[in-house]
Image (cartoon, rainbow, N blue to C red):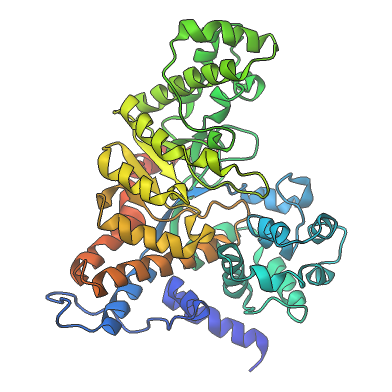
Length: 486
């Protein structure tokens, strides 16, 4: 059988299996049998093998709603390196987010790193730069997501100097108009994504509005604030704090009906211990900042705190959840763990100060995930999103889900967000998440903490049902159906 026929046959098989096909790569036997009726099934009448068969099949045939991505618009992928988020328009693009950090922390010299992602180097020559470091990083969550993506999208199960040309050919073949929908829906079985735009606008008018739903980025409303980015599109002349309030109002009045949530990653530069500050106290500091005078650390925090709560109040008025980064930082050689220690306590202060606001705490606050489970159990308005966590530490993420489901209400957990800029590795991350969810539920049943019926009943809510309710997706889909920019 020729290579092309093998790939065609493999794709046909995967289409029939959905994301379950990825289990072969992950080292777990895929589930081909038809799902059996679960009426009357209990732990005493079924063995662990059958438990896993039922749950793996259910998880791997259930669609995800992806609650967090940074995907650039598909058209941006066809402008090559003219787009600031495309370092090199070849197979290395698949490795350019998250795994690139592992490449540096494993010891890859900066000069080799720069060559690896350079558009001036022949794609076929790039693996030689990675080869000395690949054995050390291919088994991390970041590495596994990339390996699965290479397998699922290009039919190549091993990244090596022998396969790099085949991978490059696969990259070029897949990266064609329509490949976003192909990867998300056909390969990864994802209904829709929620995108936090990193392309220089607080709200992206996506060309695929129902597939790539959007958050309103609020971080620049209060961190800085970013006068040009947020102020210029409104046409509002800003000279006072009240003017800046009107700018914030404009963004919410204009885009709230289309946005699914608001998002801030301000935790990368400070703890999320925002205190309620009155406008009278913030006004002189805002004036000082507007006049480009240097602020003290105390003044900067005071202004950020006031504007944060103003932005949150507008989100709450418009029934938009507030997504906040917690825990681990992307990148390398930059994360102060002492700051992360404060996140869980600050989470509970936020919930207390704004009981009507739905806070979605992202990334399970890794490595402090036990504390975040506690917050979700205690506070009505605390929700938890497992986005990114499956590739930061897939074992910890599985354990988190097990502990969460027997501790806190199951309607407050969101289990997947790829958190990627490039589209391709989303399929790998989704496969890891599916395996983790299936394992978590199977182990809970095998250990006697859940009945099989109860475990099966949890799959739909945690994979897509909760997201539909928390983000009011039925209404958003209706509002986005005929937007002028779609």
